[in-house]
Length: 323
Image (cartoon, rainbow, N blue to C red; front, side, top):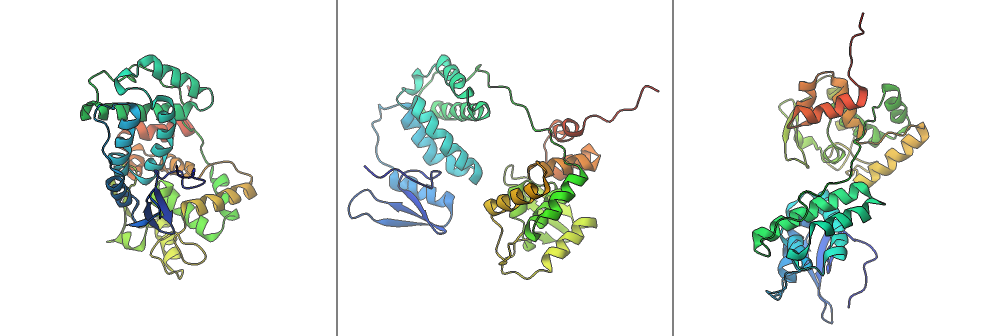
């Protein structure tokens, strides 16, 4: 039996990362490290081919279905979702792995939700959603014809974030931040994009007077006109020397990573004595437009309802007095 992982818990068994490359490590001795390339999705597909071993066709336990889901479905999702799903899948396998897939009952799901809800209500909801998705695939793959046991099982009530960042709070953190963090904050505020989309912006995304973005989460394409303050910020950024085409770069001219941004931002807000999160900047951008139609287009929301959540819940409805 191989050693238990001490890091890289987001990767499946025998898939390892060294530097920017992925490798499949055989179980036979002497162990072989088979290069799978630098792209995680492609590495997972190759891993699935190497890992693919015949299973007992009569074995229809949740563990078997979950393993197929991990091989075939998870690699097609966004990187962050893949990491979340792998972590969530381990918990589901621990709870349901030995169950035949068609013997998981609604009461079993309800008990799982009750147990997980004692310490992680939001995560329990995410895990139930994943279990439901796996079960739907199990039906499509012919493992079962039973009704999805998650149907009708209520999730825990979640309270959406309603934190609005005032201009003074934003400025306090901005002044306490270093140059790369200021760049990221300004781009997030002026474009209304998620942190991951801000960090992947490059100079090559600038074309015909607009900053072209394809959102990681939804795949939505947006072209944001480069004018006003955004034009000033981008001019400030591109004037800096750097080896990378990324707009948000560190002191060495390299792309700023998600973890580096988080560390720098946390340090800045601690110095400023302000408690908002970086993701709240997107909501401030939507709220400060003062125009739901504009905010919806800027954020790339499909529905006006979602945009309203980002605005009304943060600052409240502005209404006239009786007299």
